Length: 206
Image (tube, helix red, strand yellow):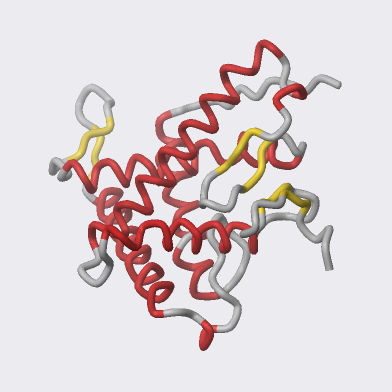
């Protein structure tokens, strides 16, 4: 069976405002309300570990930084979107990562729904059935996975860097926590990898 190639229209303003909307709706809000989203909070607040609470708080701060970026941009006389103040490299990288995660969301969800891509147990995504990808789309899918994993790593690393109570040695724990949260939010039928390395479909097990 073949699948249609996904070619989203990438217009500058749509890209920017869509990223801001998605970040607002699905990152910190999802954490606090335990609703669906790219990262879903633990459903019982009392069961959250200190590390989880630290990560959630830092993610809220990242969201505020993205909102600040939105508030200081303007259109120059040539019609180009400009930023009034240059961002530090670390902050710029994570803002771009959050925006690209939003930008790639529809494509990623499409391939996840087809069982081609799954959520692994390290907080990233994995290509599971490359034979289902059309030859003309292989480079696109491989790049999609590469970008998503790079962006997730950038976000998780930034959380460690900007939180004084988190040490770099705790990054593997953050990976595992993100993996668990992404398993929680996965839709029925999507492929997920359990902590023991086993791949299964969401809701396929009791």
